[in-house]
Amino acid sequence: MNWFDSKTGESLVDFEQKIVQEYLEQKFGYYALQLGDHEKNLIQNAKVKYHIFTRGKEKNINLDPEWLPFNFDSIDLTLCFHLFEGVKNPQKFMDELHRVTISGGYVILCGFNLFSFAGLRKMIKFDNFSPWNGNFLSITKIQNLLKQSGFTIRESKLEHFQPIFSDNKPNFSNKLEMIGNRWFPLLGNVYFLVAEKVTLSKIPKKQKWSRIKQRKTAITKIYD
Image (cartoon, rainbow, N blue to C red; front, side):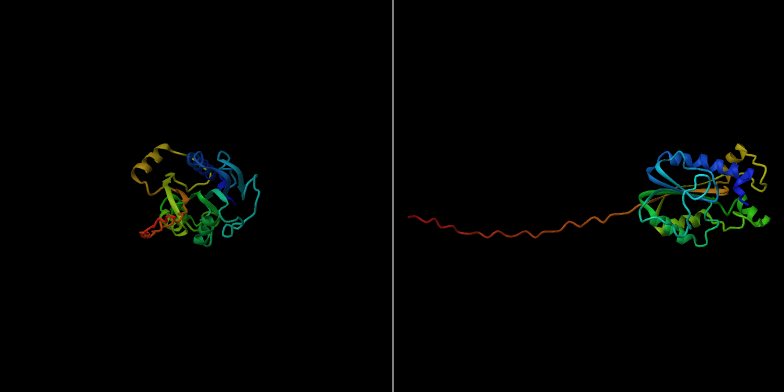
């Protein structure tokens, strides 16, 4: 069962797509990679020439998230949605993301926040299917993983303050979003993180040259 195919799951993916659009409009490049546990194309409007998918109708590659089959510095943009819930070794996966991302490239990550309605559902309902049987990480943990791998965090936020206990009632309340953002900003169901791979080039030190003392030479004019 793919929970993201349920009515509530589809509603959440639509919400997430609206959030990431503002980021995608600012990113350019040749290769964009979408990783995640749902099948919707979230990078269709990205200003990137080639799109790589691992799921859905547009799937064009098979891969193991912990062993990305790409060369060093080859991917300009990666969208990683709800993948950490099922990754066995999050740090290794983050290191792989850093390896394949070009210098100046970006990764956009989205996942369930442990301290939220989604986290509460995981604890009390014991659903034995993805993503609810996976490992939920806090936004702080994800930020630390990004930094340890070498990424620089550009933006981070928590969104979606809707109850998420039923799979067939995708009711969305703008009032709850306003209340959550104002009074409970750390309890959003999903986190969004934008990180950049920044490679610092070494600036060679200016070599100090010792001044050569000029010798005074007496010139004798020769007359015939």
